[in-house]
Image 1: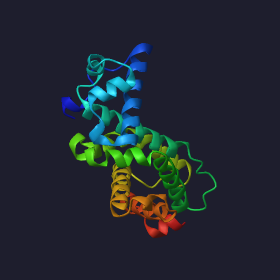
Image 2: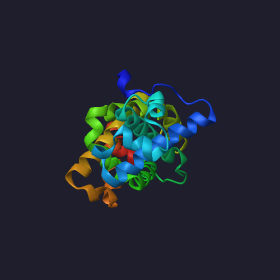
Image 3: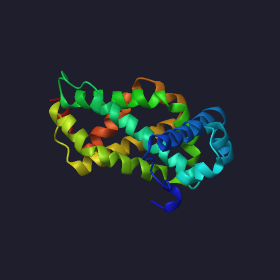
Image 4: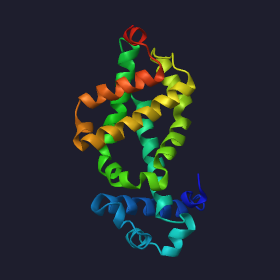
Length: 206
């Protein structure tokens, strides 16, 4: 990832962590209220209660803050999948359905921020950020699915499937922003995941 999209330094001390959290939270608040165009570093710093100089100690520009938000939100979505109860699923296909449902439910909670960042995604290489973060979850997700009886997916295919689902989410919302709120979105995304992950209809139904 280009240096301009990376944090300048990682917070180590509690005080630094609080500052970074305040900057990220302030950016999210502005995104929710006024959108990406209103997210200037000056406004972010003022709302966060820090100087612009302090903001630049951690982030070189607003794009880097957006990348951090994307990373954090991707972790939240995938952590929800890992925390989902997949026990008792009758088939591998049902296991995947439950996993995707957990993802979509968490996605809906922050849908306003996702939509506010939509126009910034190409500028901040947001899709690449999502894929990079998702790769970190592949081993744990593979183990989770295997434990629930859906362990036929290779790590590479699983990474591709995660990327496919994320891309499908944006395609759904491009057609109709409200579509992701409907129950049929889970079924559609589950089909995308199964196809990309290599689950055959016969295997998914067993």
